[in-house]
Length: 198
Image (cartoon, rainbow, N blue to C red; front, side, top):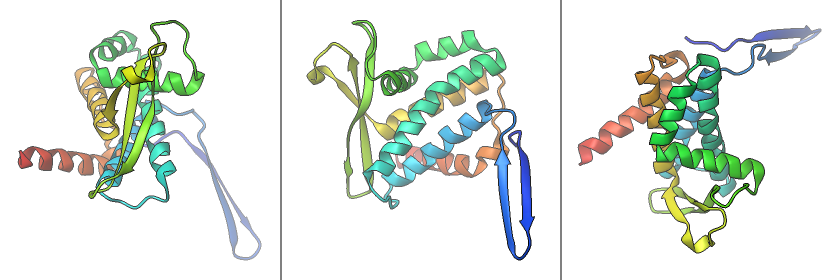
């Protein structure tokens, strides 16, 4: 099983109590971001299929974290694996990754500089017979909101995940199976079932 660099402390006090803490000593590598993107995608898929959520803010939090981590995964690949040129190429070729970037920058800065700056944001969420959904809107910052384009959140998340998966394969970056296996099985089984349905 792949592991993140950690150190730990276990403190046992008199009686029957114990305290445990984990410290991430090396910071979070690309594997941790990839794990989060994969886990959030699997959870988002569950929610779309009817899994219970406490409120729509749960859905927003998952979508928000997924898009931000999907964007920052590029920085991790660039800096940790020296794949900056390859990251720029995949970012140019993937509309989904560009929307993730626009979302992360909109979330961080609230307002972008320049008339050609793009913004992306959660536009709508709701419930269907099957489960819940979320919609992401994106547009040029100075354009009126009526000019926005929308994309289904799960479609966006899956497209970004697939773009990074293809990037990893193309660049010899091995899937950290020990971390992602339980989620991969769910996501790949879902893809196979969708293909078989036609």
